[in-house]
Image (cartoon, rainbow, N blue to C red):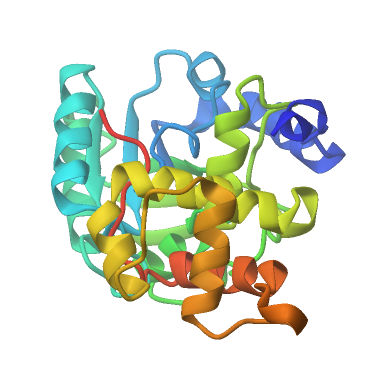
Length: 284
């Protein structure tokens, strides 16, 4: 899918966000990065590490209820070995949300001690929440803040400005717009973001995207794929699989051929709705 290598993904508001992050960083105690637990590599911003410098980082593996549980545990162990705290959560159900406050205060124990020594007891910790579009950043803030002041929509790039949220007397959060990088050097990153709906569907051909997803699922979750589509024969390539999936669902046109466009849309919708199963596309 060479098309993904030539697409510009850096709208002006995202470049502005990067500048804002640099400006606000001196006021921030830590950064919480929301990522998609199904694609923990592709849904992270590769520029973030250089942007935040030495600020403590907490990774929030959102949509964990859609990811393979064992794979998520492996990622948490991996991050811990790298000196980064990570927790699994699901903003829709609220799973794991209650771990966040304690995680922040543990990660910033030295900062709390410093405040106490300087007579600044009660000074709140300030955490900046970042993430690429559509990973659930605003939904996380709404959950943790107990209100809906942060705009949340199921489409990329809806949050435009910075917003502060008081969580409790010891914790404040700063919401920022989603950040993507200028272009994808690795086409796999673009595909994985498209599979999960983090980028707009009209950017990449839907049928080609569905074929690539089927090829990936054939290798990463063959039993779940076969079970979802009534004993699907996995011996063919992406095109063969898409045709068979369409036939299994009665999506035929004249001559008995598969309506591959309709089948592709259905497949992507079912994957994103977790109907094929809890699947992690990227493993440690």
